Image (cartoon, rainbow, N blue to C red; front, side, top):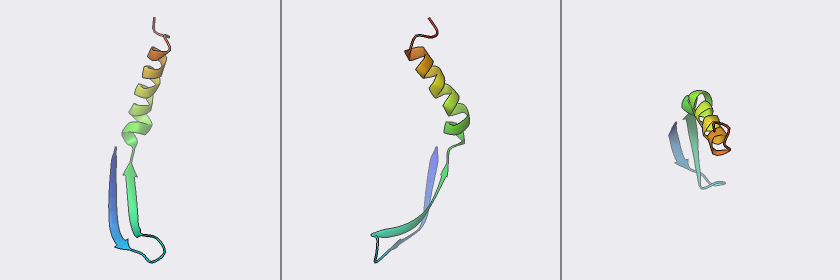
Length: 47
């Protein structure tokens, strides 16, 4: 997973303003499957 932050600047209403872009293909696609497999293993479904 990666996060990129750009256009960081000070603001009068908030402390800072910025633009944030995230990339979660690993977590969404393959990472979700791995997370589910770890949960099933922890609950004993593979015994």
